[in-house]
Amino acid sequence: MSGQAVHPLLPQAKPDEGARQDFVESLRRHLVGGMAPSHRAVYDRRALPAFRKARGHAPKTRHDARAAMLRDPLHQAWSSLMRTTQEMMWDAVDEAVMQDLPRLGKLTPRSMKNLTLRPALDKPRYAAALDVHCMPGSYAGEVADGDLRTGALYDRAVHIYMLGVLGPYNQKAGEIVINYIRRRFPDLKPKSILDVGCGVGHATLPYVEAFPDAKITGVDVAAPMLRYAHARASALGHDINFVQENAEALSFPDRSFDLVVSHILIHETSRTGLTNILRESYRVLKPGGVAIHVDGAGFAGKDLLEQYLADWDTYFNAEPFVGTLHDLDLKALTRKAGIPASAAIVETTADGYARHTGGSLKVVGGRKPR
Image (cartoon, rainbow, N blue to C red; front, top):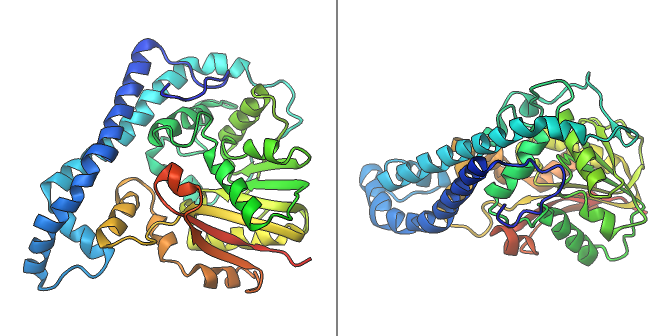
């Protein structure tokens, strides 16, 4: 399992299935750590001179850098292998999940007191019409009524995709945000916490230990993810409330939470969706409460080639909003969302995120006046 913690809900792979997963992880590690650094030499020695000759000027934007690199055979091979490896990853894990579904179904807690599903909930188009990062069926896909398949698929596959850097329980995103909050808002002692776009609860669970007196609620639009999150949290001994909600139109009343968080969610939403999420997150804050939405900083401190490579997923990995996010004027967006300038939080910080994911952290949110 390459360092992933084994827990009752993690799909059990047969030896041949495990071998395929290990191969995919090794190939991805080679592509990311071994082959990707060659892009610098390719760009400087081949792609850049060819672009200058054809266009009469050097690249001016990351889009120019992309145009230059797309014609290079090494980059073409790397891109093809990266996309193929992504699809192989989902296939290898899904094979194990499907054969393990009967066992997983038996582990679903009989009591649903901490799980509220709303089958009639309208899902945003960006969450329903796209297989995000090539995940079959995206987050809401089901093969049978009431199954845990999508959650189990994501739990195992994201550990392979991130090469284990998010920790044995894929929990590091939550821990990093908690550390950020403790330094940035040392006076905040939340009694009620909302995690929007919580998925299977990877980042949600660290808040239980960090704030043991708080009531924690995770919301997501995808029922299969929430079923798995509920079963996983119960198996790990955590008491968390999971509710199927659209973060753009939360059902909670004003001033319901001391802390609202999301972890690597906003690059998977549209411009309008993000505005609505920021507005709703601020609306449900109690006086003195804090909303923190974090994502990769993308282009911060990067040259044009590095910007394009950070934007690669936009074009080739079914992540169409990655580039859009990093082009946004986030300060203007917080104003549009109704967050006063004096309360808005928009910043980029190296924080612990850089040490675990190789990139800096983009923070967007607000603090409600007391």
